[in-house]
Length: 111
Length: 113
Image 1 (cartoon, rainbow over the protein chains, first blue to last red):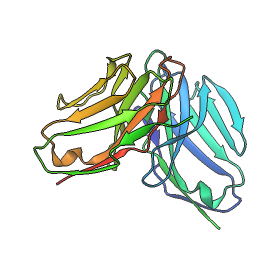
Image 2 (image 1 turned 90 degrees about the horizontal axis):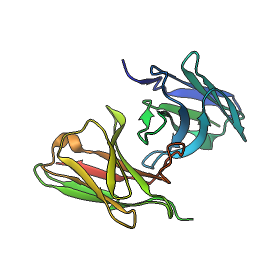
Image 3 (image 1 turned 90 degrees about the vertical axis):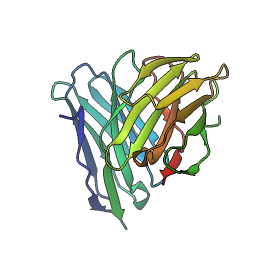
């Protein structure tokens, strides 16, 4: 079993839709949760960073962590064609710099 | 503030050769981590350097090695290249505190023929 599971997609939505991206993880020791966006042939760009359970909002993006279910989500409101990219969830233990990544979900937002 | 820079951006090598990749972290960041990204395995952690010392290591063979200099710049070396080493190699930097997240560079795309 992989430490982090993520549906690879692709997920196709029309412009303006609300997008929900999700990951599950297996190790309850993980404390830090991140979402990265990666455009084709580019490095991952940090979108959201949360610690422990709860919600965090930044503009059109909301990250949600449910540690009891080992489930993390990223919501994108009013999705735009420029949001078309691969979204990677990543988790980390306290005391370690090693990030464990999901496989990434490819998102396509059509005009 | 300048971001993470990696050189070269693209490389083509043949099997059996060795390669050295370079990473300059964000100013003030002392931790540099290296990751390999392939379509089949996704993003996998190679190792992390902090203050010139390897602090964490992933599950890669000894052909993969690295080092960090006193100015926090880091290099990664792969010896005796194999076809399966073709990948995007990403460098990420952070201040090094365990609560800090990492910021990635654009990557070096390595093709082994």
